[in-house]
Length: 247
Image 1 (cartoon, rainbow, N blue to C red):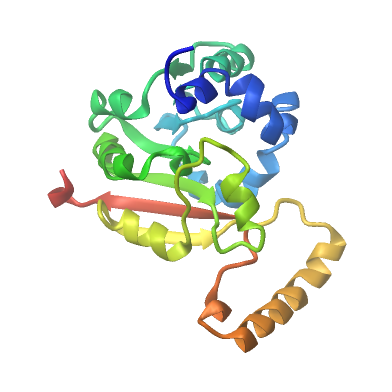
Image 2 (cartoon, rainbow, N blue to C red):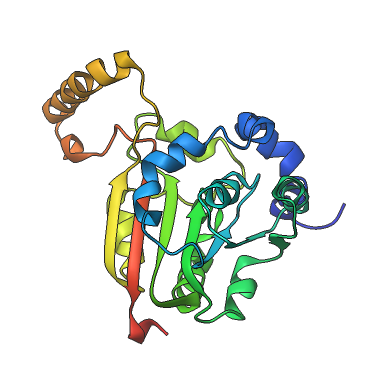
């Protein structure tokens, strides 16, 4: 067999890593919709349903299906995994997702989109390629457009598991490093911890006291750990106003 380990993993990502780490989403593409409601809903609320939206790395296509259920008419995706492209298009009912390299795809679409979304994608990009991908994203946005980037949070208590659960993960981000990275191409940036989707009564009652207790323990340990955003599994960043000097 020729090619790299990365090529082999992405060639069969749907049946390999995808089924291992995201089996529930492949079984029911609506399983992540409460998460999208809780973490993305605010950013899409009030947008005209005719805006152009691209998802980079849609995988099983759950987010695109959620967007369609919200009434958005112009949705697209680009993914490097043939199995995921076939699966997503199978339930979306049309050739919404294109097979291809995201950077090459974006290079031909300057100023084409109002919104670009990358959920659980940026951590798969090699560090040496991150800046070029970021520039391609910013160039593909229309004036007034924005990008939503959702990545695993390396401040989370189980961040080591999140970082190494997938062999195609290349990098990890904290709120600080993600903000620093996005400022290379955007002037307006917000990075927050992801919110729980449909928390249980026990979670609502016990979460905040538990967070305060853990933070107090980290404060005692010192070394600046008391400021870590350890309570959110993911980081959700919104970036807008691409910097002209970045292009």
